[in-house]
Length: 202
Length: 80
Image 1 (tube, helix red, strand yellow):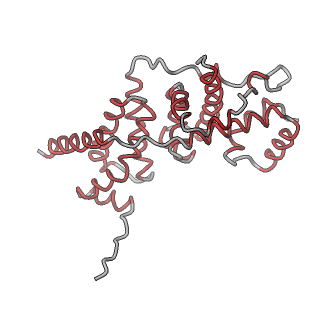
Image 2 (cartoon, rainbow over the protein chains, first blue to last red):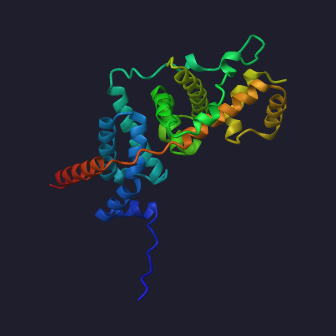
Image 3 (spheres, chains in turn orange, brown):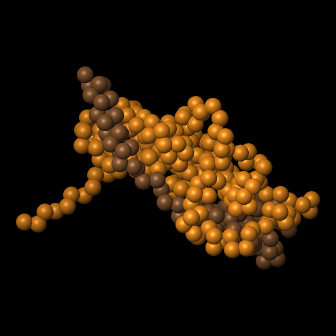
């Protein structure tokens, strides 16, 4: 007898199942999204305890509030929105995240003529090759952690989670131009911050 | 004629392939003559690629178990 593999349930079918009270549907949503949600809230909070709390809150909220999910967005956008809010709430509760620095200090500098300043244009020799090395991961994470929450949330969702500009705008409740502007400034910041980390002056 | 300041504003849209053809034309004209912006673009692109290559945080076994325990407890409480 050849057993035919069943086609995996679509997200819409899982939502219908969970709304009907199926434990199997919730189990499958957990299986599909647990690692993604953890990766997201860990990147946003940069803290193991906060990440664990935000993860638990997210899935309990999915279970309790599925009845109110109108399916105007996809299941993944809805889940990412709940998870992002849970993580940002914890960041706000922390009195001060001493690792963040003002983004304005790291934006490109120009001469009066509008020409790029030599200081901004500078890039260490071999910098591109350095970025390909595995050991750089810790420095990159350190630089990302220095972004303030408004920029970090856009950056993590867009660049690390690979979501589209439209999805990120829907998740964060901001406009598409805001997402694009924040992503751009976050990238400029990161490049400049990395230079500082390499110089040992960060 | 676009200055470096105008061009730097467009770098992310260029990297993401979101410039309209006319603006992209102006962008590329500037790049041909400006070593500073060309190097800036290359280093910004390398930075973005390095970030995308960061491996995501795998969920630790302890966190996975704690999530199951937490949900079992809370859901049972909801149902009782």
